[in-house]
Length: 285
Length: 255
Image (cartoon, rainbow over all chains, first blue to last red; front, side):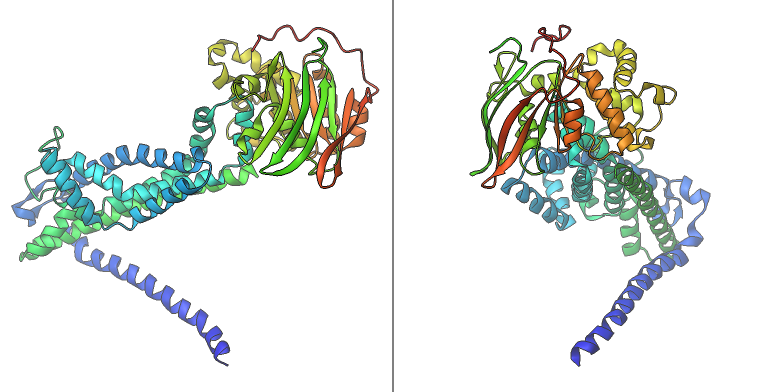
C-alpha cells in the first residue's frame, strides 16, 4: 500500500522539483533583466565608470574580467592537461590514480575564499606583487581546474584502446602516443571543460577580492606587480553593498546582466565543442 | 640459428599472474612466407602474436617467458629497444584502426612521427603504400577526404597502408579479415600473397580455408586442461607455397 503510494508520488515530486529549479533560474534571470536592462546601452558598455558607479559605464570592468579569463586560460590549460594525462594515460592503475581522483574532486568542493586568502599571503604579501591580474588568473585557474581536468579525463576514457595499441605497435613511445592520439582526440573535452570552467571562474569574487581587483582607479595592466584590474563581480559587490544612489544600483544590475551574458555565452560555446565530441565518437564506431 | 630463418620462437609461454595461458611454443618463420597461427578463439594466438612485437608490455598482468630471436637479438630480453623492434614488425588488427582526419593523414600517421626526416619523400611513400595496399586507384582523387567515409574493407586496407608506410620487414596480422565481407576478404587475401614478395607475414586466423588458400606454413593451437597448446607444424599447407628465398629483404637497415 505504502509502496504503491510512493511509486505514484515519485513522478509528481520529480516534476515539482524540476519546475522549482526551472522557475528559480528563470526568476533570477528575469529579475536581473528587469532591474538592469534600463542601464544597458552602447555608452554603458564602452565608457569607463564615473562618480563611483552612479554614472558612466563599465568598459574596464568588462575588459578586466576578460583579462582575468585570459589569465585563467593560460594557467588552467597546461595544469589540467598535465593532470589529466598523468591520471588517465601515464599511470596504469592503482592507488596513485585513485588518490589523484579524490584530490581533484576535493579541489572542486574547496571554498573559493580559501583560494583568496592563500593567494593574498602568497602573491600579495610573500611575493610582493600587491594586487595583480596575474595572481587573479592563477587563483581562478585553481577554481576552474577540476572542471577542465575532469572534462579531459572523461574524454580520454572514450578514446578507443585500439587507437593507442595501433600507435604503440608502430613503435611510438608514450610521449608520441600522447601527442598524436590522446591530446588531439581529447581536445573536444578540453574546450567543453574550459568554457564551463571559465563560466564559473569569471563569476567568482572571493578569490580575486584581496588579490587582483579594485573598485576604481585601474585601467589596463602594464606589468605584473601592482597591476590590478577592475572586474564585473567586484563592481557589482561594491555597488550592491554601499550605494544609496538608485542610479548606481541600476548600473550594478546592468553589470550583473553583462556578467550573466558573458557566462551564458561561454556555456553556449561549450555546447558545439561537446557536439563535435559526440560526432567524432559516432564516427569511430 | 639457421640463416634461412627470420624469426624463431623458443619455448615461449604466457602467464596471466600465476595462471598459465599458453604452454611453451617453439617454431621458426622463414622469410617471404605467410605463416598462419590457427585455432579456436581464446586459445592465445593473438596474445602470442603480440609477444612478437612486445605489445604484451601494455598489459602488465601478462608475463612472457622464453625467447624470440630476430636478427640475432632476443626480442623478449628487457634490454631490447621495443620501439625499434616495432618499427620493423608492423601489426594489423582485427578491426580497422582509423584516426580522425584525412586518408593521407592516416597513411602518414606513423612515418610522420617515426621518420620526420623523410618529409620530402612523403608524397612518394603515400602513393607507394596505397598502391601496395591495393587502395591507390580507389582513393587517389580524394586523398584529403575524411578516412571515416571509406567502407570497412577500404578502411582495413588503409590500416595496412599505414603499416606499410613504415617499411616493416615482418607484418603481424591479427584476424584481419574477420570483420569483412567475403569480397573484401578475397581482395585482402590476394593482397597478402602479393605482400610476401617484400615482407614476411604472420597471420592469426580461425578460418581453415584462409590458411589453406594463402599460407605457406601453419601452426594449430588447441586446448589442453584449459591451457592453450601448440599442436603440430604443418609445413607447406598452401598451394601457393614457393621455395622461400634465402636472402633477407635487403633494403632494410639493421636495428
